[in-house]
Length: 114
Image (cartoon, rainbow, N blue to C red; front, side, top):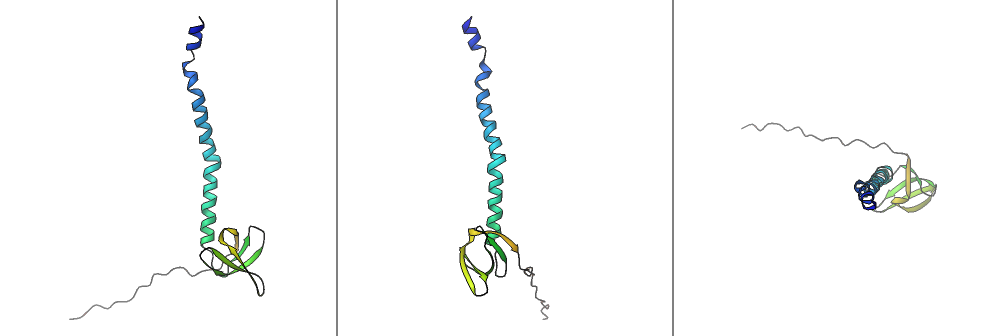
């Protein structure tokens, strides 16, 4: 009698595995994926920095970008006062300088007359 009761829960062994898989799925879509999206957006914003942009650092310092190097940004925080920051230290762009759109240059080519 005890043996029949113990073996009757064959589907019960699969339930905890499904619950763990469901938990990992929920964590991925609720935590990991949005964080990856925010990180991609931050990297894109930091790579698009150009001189003239007004930015805020992660420390709350407002400044204007004066020079951009590979992994650093030179900010002017007051007239004549410039400080150098790592690109990841830029939290957001307050005001972006308008940049001319890339125009396709087409040259007028005259047909060759023989």
